[in-house]
Amino acid sequence: MKTIKQVSEQLNMPVATIRYYDKLGLVPQLQRDKNGYRQFSEKDIYTLEMIQCFRATGMSVEDLINIFSLDINDPILSLKQREKLLKQRKQIDDALALVDYKLKRYTEMHQQS
Image (cartoon, rainbow, N blue to C red; front, side, top):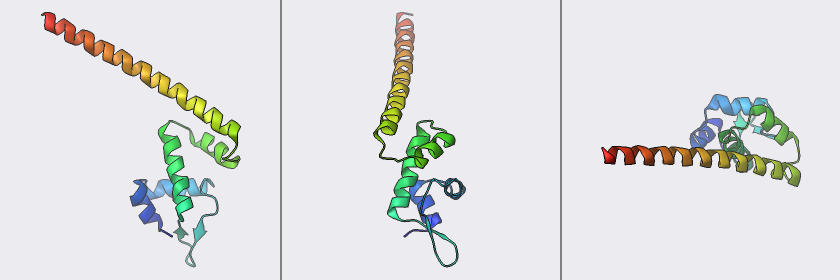
């Protein structure tokens, strides 16, 4: 079991953010010691890592709450999230291709000068 400070350092996630996710119920079955301090198991840390990953994709807190209130093993849920991530990846790939094209054109124009 780890303390909130240890988990914060391990995940590079602010303590206040961890408390917020706990308050929202996103870390179910989080244990507390006799003094009421949060005690994080490896499963709790994995849950926070999943939250961190989903947030990095731009997922809203409201969507997180919906996902974590459902069965995480639900294949429909997994497919929907996968589709959303694939769409985001395509958008990023398209934007990157455009930037690469612009850089190439810029370089060509300056080489001709």
